[in-house]
Image 1 (tube, rainbow, N blue to C red):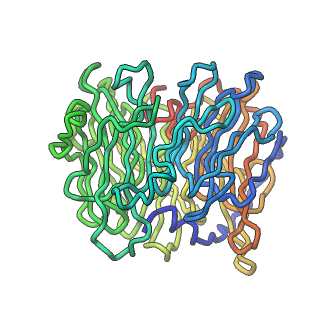
Image 2: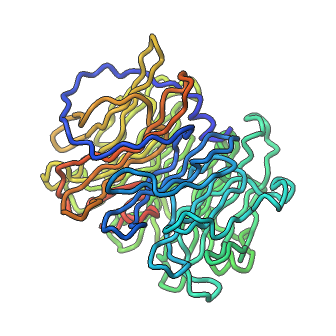
Length: 483
């Protein structure tokens, strides 16, 4: 069963901890009708007014929606444009100007072979990978799109190209082991044409968005991808870009193996052993958090949490006060849907020691962000904490800060109706005044008749000029920690 489908069926429960609330100013809140939001916000100035605008995907599984892809005015919260989609858009946008109008265009994808290039200025579709006239996509072996980053120009047309994975059929029953083989693809950003397409090894499905590193040299780009699902075994793989371009993915090297469950959660890359190379930190469904040496591919450290599952991509930051990046994530005790508890886990990146492990209580599937909130020289974790009224089943959420240095937890702003499902908040200086805003999204309780998603901009008195991990997948939006 797809992770997104699982999340839609989950109810949240209360932690029961009293915490002080620090009020902040809400700049604006916008409501998107009929939109459940899993996508994390991305930013660029679409209307050239000097403010960063917001692009986000939305929608419910299997439903056509007018607000499938939406651009929001960062200054006012007004909708700039929206694009109708045939199904849910859950990825986070990539940005590049391909129509030469000085405004970055939007590349975003999701369910049922949804992948678009959209004019950032007008909201007009530049190209669609699988337009309606192509017919039913499954007959051609295409499913859902997953994407995280650009590849350097592969077809010499002057534009970076898209590295994507395609796979995952949510209509198949969870216990059905006969699942469609996923694909690793390179797609031209200029026109949406497929430049390379290779099947995932071992005839496995994929839900993992591929990403790259150059640990072996400037002209030796390697791709990290993965196979398997929530009930299907799989591997974390590495393959040279040159091999992918020759359709030789079958010769990819296995970095990690799991005989029970696959690899779905995005890895992050950070140098935790001080050798100048990006190491690979992966949290997997089967309750393991692993750090792999990016130069030798040897295991640096690993933690196994029996009878736990993890759906939360790691956050990287300076939480322990040394010069080595540290790792934060959340794990769930139990097996879906019977989660007993959610646990915060902080790992010292240098030693591999667990330095913080604490019950969070609530269902949490969105990553936190790392920022020096109180200017004390170390990072805090900021995330949206979900709660539920066990009598009415109404969900609420609130911004929460974890201060590891002082071993304190506190809340910011008001309690809101609805829950953050999997969208990671973002710290961004929207108006370029030196002070940061927090942009985050949440959706209403599924027990209510009216379905909506909300995007909110909260003014924060944060002056950290270079937050360690300010958004989903970090400062470069591709999982790489380079602070």
